[in-house]
Length: 254
Ligand code: DGL
Image (cartoon, rainbow, N blue to C red):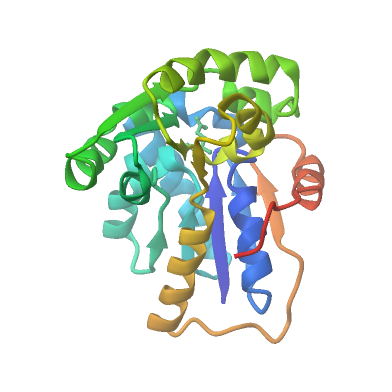
């Protein structure tokens, strides 16, 4: 039995790194849908189609649990996947609930893709968990592409981030929710812009906790033949994706 993880590209590797660290007795299979990146520029119906095809692929590789390590695909496709397949899914959504609980200023910021910002799921979560505070959303156009091109830690990325984050800082936010898994790779530059007064919420630890719960509930057994994660891409260079994964340094353990 394997655990499948997918994203439109490299973003979900951040989640995979945590999973590998916390569940070393399980085998993981990762799929990066780089031919269709960015998902944020596709329609929800197209994202459902891509996500279904990837789930078929992972299912055929004996994955008994699938982590949708992409806010955009979770927002558009996870309910269809849950209806279609009899296996458990773990999605990733902007962490509105913890951000609103932690906020002292009553203002939180959410940086995410267009599909996520405009999606019904985010709207519902804000109504459910943050009705008493102000939620300032902003679309991170171009950021996913910079991460994919290996330009996360550059002045070019910082300039773009500044454009998106400064208006949020003017609103006096004290929590910043990263609503796209790619943005975790921009964390150094984000910290430089927002400083110490804004707390950044990384959703990866809560995804790992949920995976651990579902492993127990669904009796998904560990392997006695542990391998390195198998990494696939619909793009042209799986080796490059593997190299990117191997170079990830997590800021902390869970
Ligand atoms: N990592 C995806 C997410 O969390 C990227 C979205 C995209 O491809 O636009 O939303």
